[in-house]
Length: 107
Length: 122
Image (cartoon, each protein chain N blue to C red):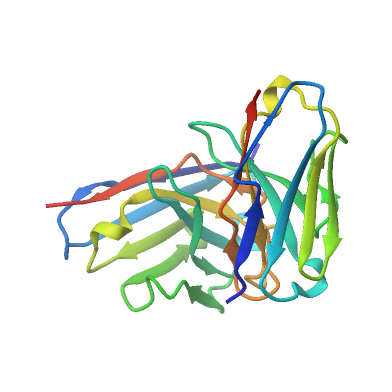
């Protein structure tokens, strides 16, 4: 099973700042089959990024996914108030597993 | 508009059974694989089970294998999860999630329901 480790656990930032979230896999994720989700309190997760770098429908371009192999990054270029949430990565190259999440909170 | 509406959750004693349902609308249900993903209170996401469009490929997380059974009825646009021998550690919000493809399980999830809460406790 591929284990995904997300860091940091919590990111404290102000609106307008840049957020950089990391997702590291225990083994290489084939074909960059990695997705990112946003989950706000009391809501279902929402797909942001699939295939490591493709934005899902309706996702603003301030969200950018990058990486390959075992190291992946989600970058939010300028945080908007609605971006404060928990973010999960998920790999689907070998079965299906999620990372433990990164909480982006208001500083 | 894609809609996924889960139902069937509730409070159940350890060792008992529960059947979850997910009613789908707004897309051609039998074109897509479907999954169940759960989230224990205050915890992260855990994939539980998935089924391809034709039910030809089915898979489970090791934590539920042999106890849970996923199925679908394409004529009713519905997904199911039969949960037997329930344990306290199965307590979670269970989400129904749609895959962007039909014929394989390895995928992201492009739409999610709001979840149904299962609590296993005596």
